[in-house]
Amino acid sequence: MSGYRNSNYRNGNYRGQGWSDRGPQQRRVKKLDMSRSEEFSYLLGRIVEPLPESVRGAIMGGIYSIASKKGANEAKEFIVRKRQEGVIDSEMGKKLIDLIFDYSKYR
Image (cartoon, rainbow, N blue to C red; front, side, top):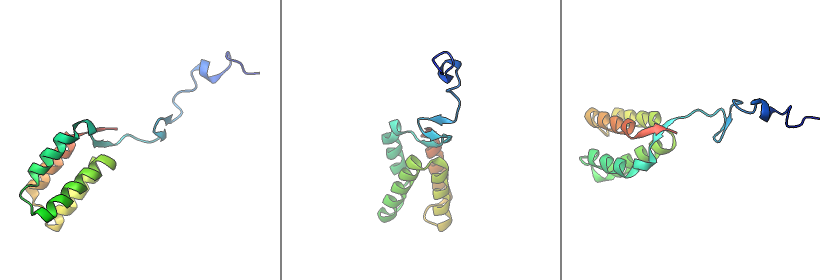
């Protein structure tokens, strides 16, 4: 009979088994800090202001959603892809990448 004396809980073996609130061995990813999302949205809008209105909303929405749900690296890849397509220039791309990493945290 395994009572409290012989249990894993008492021995401390219940920890470190790869499980947490996020599930089995899920790594932390750098994503948009949601507590500062209003500042991020404002600065994002200021950076993409020179773009035509039809493109501006798509770029802002894409960056915001990718950075908040998937992660900062995926948002960076999105910006690089848009820069290669010629939608944004290299200076704007650098500002956007810096903004994303400034307003991101591990979660």
